[in-house]
Image (cartoon, rainbow, N blue to C red; front, side, top):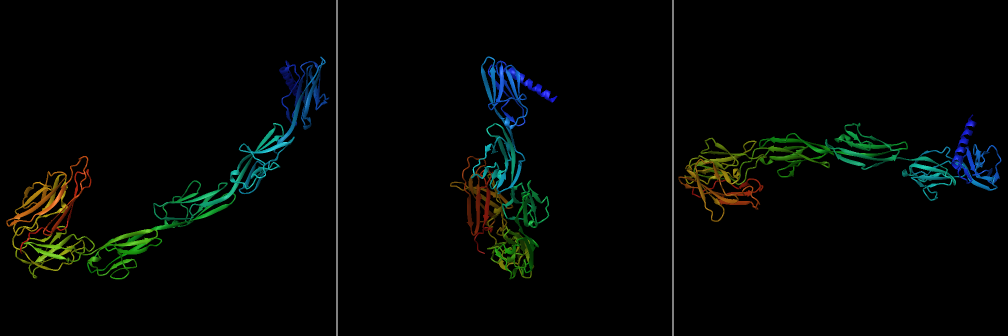
Length: 636
């Protein structure tokens, strides 16, 4: 039954061919192709184009085999080989003796091949980087097979000097194989001279042992809650290595953070405990490699003192302990910040095992001391304020008035480490009496008032600070004077104000000359040629001066006198400046104005300094060289 089906199929093909070529009178051999694989069927149809006797020849010899040659009709014949062999290849001729007596023939060349076949060729290879490797391609086929190696569409040459080349036995040779040699290669096999080919893809993998490269072998960092440090481990190898870390402490995910491939380790909030060796290990199926990073963790110095302030009396002993920490361990030093000198390890003021000791405290010992920690990782310090009473006033002069005594200090007493806030003024008429006293702020004139005229007094004073009253000065004997004109009034320069085109300042009368002040005379004018004085009076109880509606962008002179029944005081004089009117455009340069006035030993210096051309007024800066009231020269 199968043979019958095959016969029917062949006849159908022949009939189809006859239909196609039935109108063509030319002799022709009709076939589907010229190349046949061993075992395939070969079917040839010879169309003569007219009646006649058709014979078949192979390579010039007649084929007399009824199983292979059969007549289709009067003008056609077929030639059939059920299973082709290599011997069936050759030149086939269809020869026709036409009934008309004419002879003709036509020829066709048939090819029979076997393969190409790659047999048991391995299609996957792994090699170690740097080795010489061979990639075989086992090709069989007949007739002869031509083999080529192709990569990226280019044929690999067979030149003997090439690192990558095809050998005579068709093996691919790669010398000292590199990572870039990895990939897919095509083994191209083609029947020689015919368009019959096969290709086989062969994969080449190049492996390499891991290598570890460090960006830094030693890392130094300062410990702290805001300090993070990253350790980088650059790894290479094929297959891609896995990275592991060995650290000095237990790995804590909140403290040790890795990136996606674990090549970077970030340590958050670095602490001293993080000091040590960090080993980065890279592993693949070829080998293992590691490298070590040394992490040095320094700690910034810290200073701890037993007290930040000590108040002691003169003559007492004081001590303050100090501890310093850090890595490396800092050196400890005590510094006297008043004189800038380091405290030695011996003497009345000394350092013993980090402790500052002061024996028999004196006022000059008072002030700021600094405990300092010094190391290669930084410096730190902590100040300690040691306070005691002020020293006694030394450079002191006493000036009598009709009902007052005025103290003048050439230099202030030693403060004892904290500012002198006041002075205690004492007086008495005889040694049998108790001292009477008043406390006067340090910023005000040091005057004892409401005394009796023509009276002998013993007077002295002492400085007062936050610790207490210091030692009193030597006692001075002074006789008050007779009644006379008042002293010059005192203007509190540190409380002066200049706002827009107005001026104000506090006013005070220290010594009235033994007779009550009746009034104050005020004179002021612009400091320019031809300006007229303006005058005004203030009552005896006035405590301030206020001038309004002054001219902008002007300098002024001011004189103030006090008057009693005995006459007028010498004037207290000074200068001040009213700034430009706010909002003027364009602004004009305005240099600071300074004035210096003197009258019988009393000096007042005033400077006006602009802060901003757009502010509504300048700030007035007044420097008082002496707050003594001006006194009229008179005989005692």
